[in-house]
Amino acid sequence: MNQWQHGRMNSDVNNPHDGLQSLVGMEVSAVSFVRDYVELHFDGPVLRALSNPTGVYGGREWRFPAPGSLDLMHRYIGKTVDGCQEDSGRALALHFGDHLFVIPLDDGSSLGPESAHLVGVDRDGGTSPLGGMRIW
Image 1 (cartoon, rainbow, N blue to C red):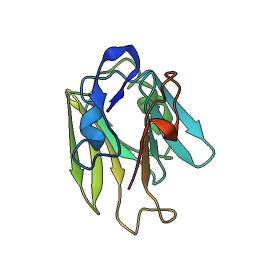
Image 2: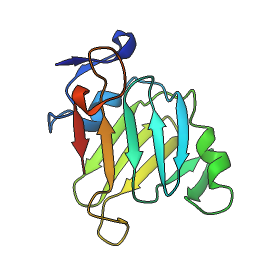
Image 3: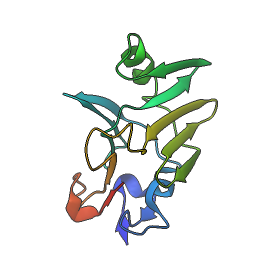
Image 4: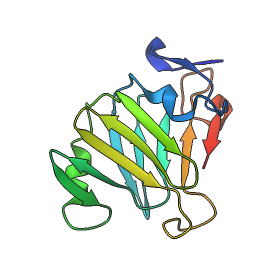
């Protein structure tokens, strides 16, 4: 079992029963745009969307990289995950109250063989596959 930063959550992202569930109760600390993918940071763990994410924020639907999506995605910073869904082969979803962040997993949405990564933290508290890594 790995201890997430700040003692928020005990989980193992390699455990197929944990995965996204390990992020429930954690706050988004950063949204990063890296070339052609997006990352949600959680003060340690990182959820990487390799397929273009979609969602709803404040009642407004968005689809990355459409105009306006970056502005809406930044608003997730400071929000706490209060639920999640994992529909294998279709989508991953994080719930933030009335807001939703979705990573499509279907073949038509994936830009390569992988659609998402959840990277854990190592013993020193740094983001690292040594802390566990889940790949969809």
